[in-house]
Image (cartoon, rainbow, N blue to C red; front, side):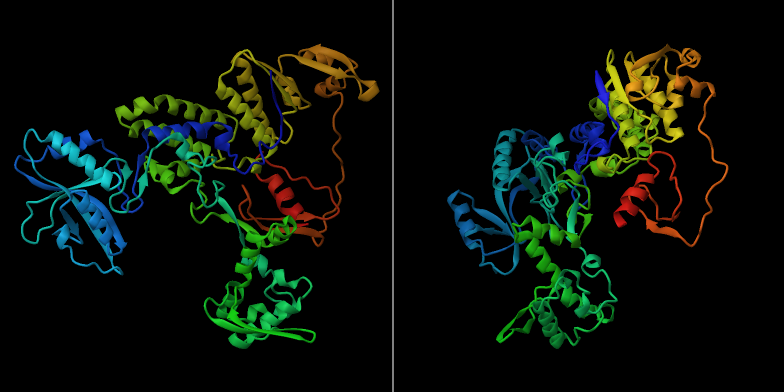
Amino acid sequence: AISIEQKTTSRNPRSTVGTVTEIYDYMRLLWARIGVPYSPATGLPITSQTVSEMVDRLMTEPDGARFFLLAPMIRARKGEYKKEFAELQKKGFQRVKVDGTYYEISDVPALNKKLKHDIDVVVDRIIIKKGIESRLAESFETALALADGIAIAESADARGAAAPQRTIFSAKFACPVSGFTIDEIEPRLFSFNAPAGACPQCDGLGTEMVFDEDLVIPDPALALNKGAIAPWAKGQSPYYMQTLEALGRKYKFKPTAKWADLTAKQQDVILYGTGEDDVEFVYQDGARKFETVKPFEGVIPNLERRFRETDSSWVREELSRFQAVTNCEACNGMRLKPEALAVKIADKNISEATELSIKAADRWFTALEKVLNKKEMEIAARVLKEIRERLHFLNNVGLDYLTLSRASGTLSGGESQRIRLASQIGSGLTGVLYVLDEPSIGLHQRDNARLLETLKRLRDLGNSVLVVEHDEDAIRTADHIVDIGPGAGVHGGEIIASGDVAAIMKEKRSITGDYLSGKREVPVPDDRRPYNKKKTIKIVGASENNLKNVTAEIPVGLLTCVTGVSGGGKSTLVIETLYKAA
């Protein structure tokens, strides 16, 4: 038996629609198996080759063609490299290519340690002819070991000023231009919940808490000495006022000035510090006087340092009032490290695919079948089938507008329950008893109809579905109804009727039957209280989750009902916006 509650799926910030439905697990497998890594520097695909493939490639050159086999040891790095040249000589290497010119190692001129240099080791000089495959393989292995998996075959037949032909070989996924590498492409590389794939800066959350200028300076109309700088306003410490006086002497402003009246330079100095510029600070506490000359740290860098260094949870909580959630700068909110984001299928990395709505993702994965070649389809067919089926189930329960990257904690109760139901259908289980407690709560009638279709689909798969419900549509849809009553508490506890809708309506003691038959109904009031347009609560520009810059007026002193389809933004408007602002 499986019980499905109606509640928000998870408050864990790592939980998304994709992870809850297991679609993301299949996507990780798909990108690991048929994804192609691209170089962030060149935008071109990067591939790995075996030594045998390298030998076969070079042997396709015409007989008699001459090549230098090079190991690119140093790329665009400063230094003299005397020690490295000496080590190469000890290992038996005789020639190197330094900044485009070939030298005997003993004849390399002194390098300017302040300039960047390129150094290639000449591993072998080769003339293409039959029978050199073994020697070529050994030379490739030597070059790959010297240059961390990279080897270059450069033509020795170039004449005059013509640039020599160069073929770059890589034993691992590596960009020869930038040095960008991917050791191995496995499903864990695409997991933002594992160190192997998570962005190292945000640890896979996709967001960071940063000190926000608008929270540090909530009211620009206030004067500096009247609390314009919110973290300094509490208690109006003499230390902070004397700091402002010192900054004012150097940067020509008064502590009585309003924040909005300061120049951009003056505001920047206060918020982010003076850099390397010294300021003469004078601090006086009663009879004691202290003078110092040093750069000013800045309000925001000071808050960042205190937050980072403190062991006090109280201090962290106090400072967090001035922080706002923002996308991680390193991954731009995509949660994954650069290596994972470099792997693409049909020009999309895995994070870009999760940003698609369920409906758009269904179309995109369907279109992949026409894009992939025969070998890729053989690898991907089964995984694609699982992904598309789950997307199809989510579409069927009316969740086509959600994205796979949507955080589970931001879903409404109705959305969460339908996701669970869609996941159960996707699991393909049969012979299971599903128990649901009032699944229609929080659902609009449009979504209620979709919910009932989903429940019938579960039944049709060969399962039993048991629902505790008051909704009329659910009762009328049921194959069998058990009515418990007749009243509540000590007046209940009996089975009043059991059977189809007709049997319930025939039972005289059944209150449920009376409402189903129309003998009883909820009275609609004839009169409504008048709406005083001068007494309203106004919400302006609400835009969290599904809300699109909403402005709403709610009358004071009336019973107001906010309605709409599930996921339309009702709870976001009333709870997340209005309630939190109260």
